[in-house]
Length: 620
Image (cartoon, rainbow, N blue to C red; front, side):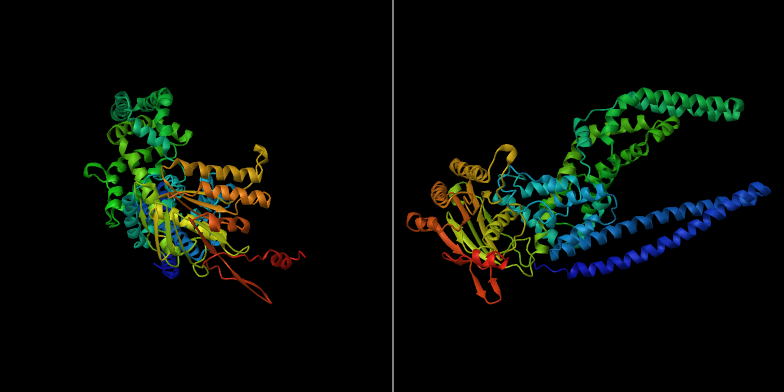
């Protein structure tokens, strides 16, 4: 598939037409509601003032029509909000395809006024909360941040979906995923790519649910399967039956009605006050969850009616024992709706004085947990996996050219240390300007030379990112890619740490020592990425140190790429190592400046443009 914003730009026009239609209907119904309200008030006042029974009839009719109009208006308003969310989602696709990160984050901030909400939304979209500086490659491969792989590919609107996608980028989704498992995910991603409208509908629905809160407390409650005491239901039924006494007294003892009503209210409040502490266990689990579970229910309803045919996707959508997920969630959604009605303390006080909502909610929450407790964890976990697959599908939309790689996972680590990529591109580069390159390493170490700014670092990042995408089942920006299942480790962005008495050179030593330590374990194949090794020390130590590292990393189960300007080290490798291949980048100079073609070639480059670049910025 080739990246093109045209489909989504056309969709924007259609969505705007729907927005205009529903906005017009909403304004018309608002006027009708206004007229009905004041007409009804007039009829009621006139009926009371003039004692005209006919106007009571008019009031009743107008009130009934008013209620119907309110319901219709509510549905129109919901559709209006949905199309506004859909427009935002569709516009994000356009920005994502164009590589317009500023436009993407402007859409993330759309409609937000408060600074804390804006900052929260940007953190949510950038995935910066998942950043780990103790990870094998996280700090080097632009996984998280404003202009990152996460921000460009993320379409997950739930906390658990974002977390699942982040774990895939970090290689934590399934560290021992088989080649068959990767192929299974590729098939699922292929079908999702073929349904862009469904992806947008799903994201817009999730966006409206404001799914930023993690449902862990509710999942833990459901998993415990702790039944509520039957006395809760018995007491609730008794409280409801007590209202029969005031009703009966209206006929037989009218003078006692007021006292009986106050007595029932007092009894209800005493029962409620006694149960507040015991019921806190249930309401703590339900806190903030009514909208969450309602949205999860809606998302599964959308999935179940989506017509998805992939076997793996169908297994994630289906419930246990032939039941649909929505059938088990519908009752929980209803229970939590009533739990949400009494979320404010004052309203909880008022409603429980009349009706035992707390006792009933807690009883039915406990009964649901006993009957369906396991289904909630499974529903959330499967939804997270589906959203991670949706994120993986985005490469097919944003890349100029993409294809699904062939990944082998042999039991022998020696057979897995290879990467054969043809026309690979970095997914953060614009498909209009990105330059593709082909790289082949098979139990080899590729030494890459070239001038500053020629593309060396971008190339090794591209190899790393393409490998990550391959292992998560995504398409890769390339014409073809074959690779083995390898652990990825890198040493690229090195920074000092004064708090831990860590110099830049020491920090690099620590990173590279971890790579060497992994290389000696021998339990899995290794792909390493090292940029400008030992740049923080003198030339002699750099050369000697680099040669020691190369010797430690020379094994059949290891392959990697290393950029360098250390030509003394390169000269030593020519005759001393049989497992090293050489690539380089070059440039051309003219009277008006320097031109890079960013094309990788075989061999060694000994060119340097440092003095030329210094002169360009005024350092002479």
